[in-house]
Image (cartoon, rainbow, N blue to C red; front, side, top):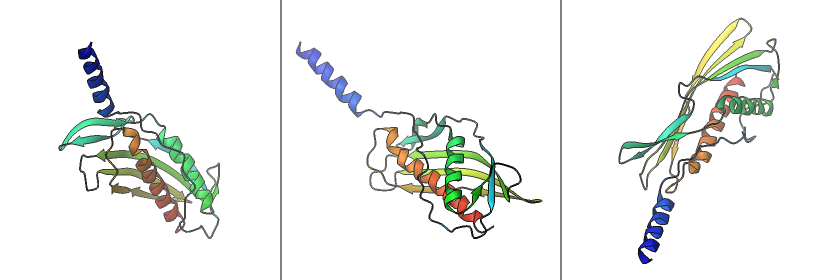
Length: 187
């Protein structure tokens, strides 16, 4: 009987300390745009936001002793969330978000890469991330293509759950949306 209790205790202990790889979610864009405001009140139409990544599920990995051990994944519709967040930030910045191609600015966005890397460093930045975007803006007969590749890194406490990386992913997305809107206020 004692051996069964020891076995149960060991299983509970190991199960509680193992890494729990759950789907990482992206929360709605918090209305936190604080950049410049559009002086001309231009209308913007977001023609499309596409997630063009080959593997739309994998968004990064865990490094342990320099070796990739676990892939991080998400089942989010990043394109829809990005379009919703961008629309919200554009409104805050004073743009009129239109619904037709006769707007002053017509945008198409491609999400090319999302990558989060969590390593086992104890006292240094142990999570870094990067989002790669291509933004095509049509302004009359002129077409402007801009690439954005915001990245960040920081230290988070020791983590045994992939869900602990959600706030960091949300920050990356918010920063990239804010960068695009800020740059649009200058056009």
